[in-house]
Image 1 (cartoon, rainbow, N blue to C red):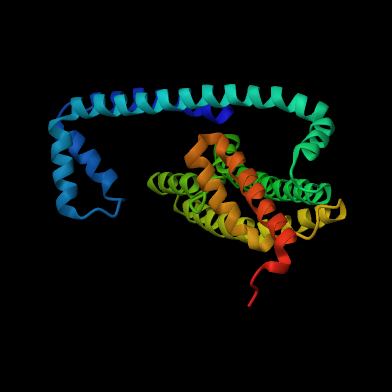
Image 2 (image 1 turned 180 degrees about the horizontal axis):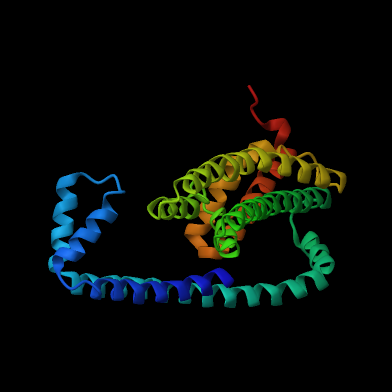
Length: 291
């Protein structure tokens, strides 16, 4: 919620600043010269770059208004998503109260209604609980580690560390890309402002520590530790390394299907599917063709 509100405020401030920036140039030539110095830092060929500069110089009023409208659209989208997320969060908290209070009674009733034997019901519930715990907490743990590490680095650089840390933690849920959508633009802004050393350090930290070390090294370690804890509590043997792909795909699919809450629903649905297949194997294992 903090990230949504802060980003909304920043988007509105940015829209006003961009419109004021365009209005500050007396002539189109002054604007073209400034745009040329800005776009020279981007890998854009010279011909389309000059055409773009000339077009913006001729239509600077319309461009300023269009940028403001785009940012206003983003502002509305962020606001709507924030309200939807907050409403869903209240509903989840309300439901969890009753689930935690009446959970054992509901579980016993589901075992009675289930067509499976109670032994298989126990396997199904235990495996689902263990897998959901491993997949969900490992995802949240990686997000927390990435957010903390990036907060420390940006605080040392004198940047808005809390905002960037929360942004990295939230973006870590995005499959494949992850925190790249945060640290890459931040590094570019530093490079454009002349802080080349800080920009290079931020790229190395974002790519090696945040992206590789925490996501590809710490995540399997955390998943193995969580699996061992679940095994001690009767959740059975979990081959967690086989579920790394499931974690990525389920998070991505949940995000597409359910929106921001799909970041949590996706891994839980994946855990349910895996549990059903494992119970099927336990029941029909002798008749399966293993050749």
